[in-house]
Image (cartoon, rainbow, N blue to C red; front, side):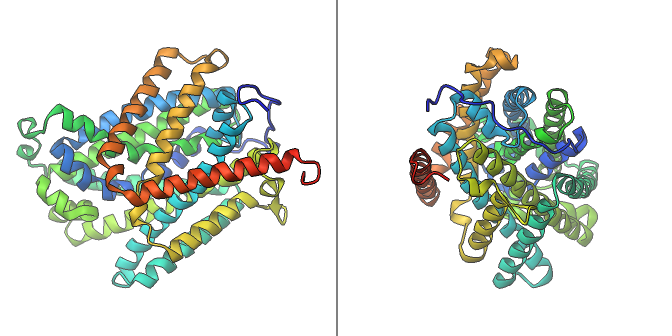
Length: 439
């Protein structure tokens, strides 16, 4: 089978559409505004200083370009396979799509485990004085609860994300207003900003706070009119996230010195809130972090079921992964949850913190390149797609030079996942072609 031709149009969801623009957007916001905003400010501040808010604006622009590509693709080809359907449309039903699908499924399980561990850390810090055993227990419990929620369906996921996003946005709004009204303007003076080169290079860090917007593509099958609604949901989610990130970064760096933000690390928001809100500010940020990481875990699990079912129906995955246990629980979701639980309970994932970022950037770039080949069907503007390709490529190269080279464990894990994805894809396609092994 050729990588450049489609054998069929692929399955369509038989379920009636159940989501609106706001719900789809909130699934994306919940995926984006996770633990990243709490841990990212210090690292970004070390590069961009108090100009981190500019870095977030630039990162939002890069995400918007990619969002344009996704929205055009999804509006024309709504699918439970989400962004993997876009890979398929650009490259065909061959190995490119299969390998990417396995790569995304595996990486998603790792990232879900990492976000769950972040939840466990915040929960344990608040309730058990950071007991390491309880960190694991809380992480596993969260994955189990969110897996059950996903079994109940996209409507249940959307309702939960609405609650999460309302709480997170509400809390961060309180934080932003309280800090923005008590700013120390001299801390944000442009005369103290680093060079434009440093600010631009910091986008390689701040862009990762936007990576979760890709999960919105998996809601297309649940939208009554994806051609109209998916772009609106995509840009609404990116707009909300950008406003949050910019306001929070101005509030933090307008309250604390750059050195203090860097030293505070993941607690920078809590430290910045204390001068105005006192001890209540610390607890406000802790609760916000718990909700944010819960939402990110929920959204991380959301694509697994539809992705696996769609890829199985297309022959990219074994039929088993397209089935539902008890007629209800998608096997792809259960597999992702089990892997995430094993990783969260048994491994230290700190050393591979950038794996999701690296893989997502490669996949995003791949999609936009493939989109150029079929833009006549989607109506996308070629110059915007080229700009999206250039932007994500620059971000990835900068990220590789500034971050990945210092994380050998991440590079090893990525290499292992790629090799395993290659082996599994070639094995399955050989098995599928063999009459004696065909399922």
